[in-house]
Amino acid sequence: DILTAGSAPPFAINLRMGLVESALTLLINLAGLFAAMHMGDALLAQGKGSRRALAVLLVAVMALNGIVLTRDVFNLFVFFELIVIATGGLVLLSDDARATAAGFKYLIVSQFVSILLLVGIVFAYHATGTLNLDGLADAALVAQPAGMLAFFLMFVAVVAELKPFPANGWALD
Image (cartoon, rainbow, N blue to C red; front, side):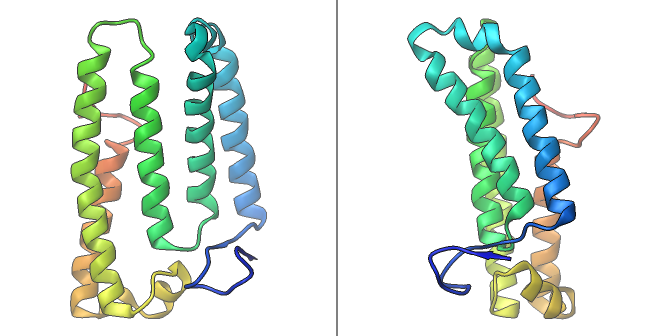
C-alpha cells in the first residue's frame, strides 16, 4: 500500500501495488507504447499540436494505470473522467469530418454515465461512511438499504461506460 501526502485515508489517496496490479500496469503501459508507435505518424502530423496529442495519449495511459492502482471509489470516478476526456481528444485527432460529431456525442453520453456513477458514490458513502474500496467491501455495501441502490447505480455506470466491451455494441459513430 502506498499513501500519498504522508497521511492515512481519507485525508490522502492510497494506492495498492501488488503482483496483480503490477501485471496489469505492465500490460497497460505496453499497450500505450504500442498505441504510440502505431499512431506515431498521425500524432506527429499534428504539427505544433503533436506534443498536445502525445500528452492526450499519455493522460489516457496514466488514467488507466490509476484505475488499477487506486483504492478509493471517488478517485476511480476521477480516473474514469480523465479517460473520457482523453478518449474524446483522441477521437478528435481523426481527419474524418464525422470525428467532431462522434467525439461530442461520446462526451455527452459519457457525462450521463458519470452522473450515474457519482450519484452511486454518494449513496455508497451515505450507506457506509467511507469511500475506500476495502472499507466498502468490509461494510457489506449491498446489505444496507441505500447500499443496494448505490451498487446498482455504480454497476450500471461501469457497464454503460464499457459500451459494452468487447463488442462495443451501442458505441456511437
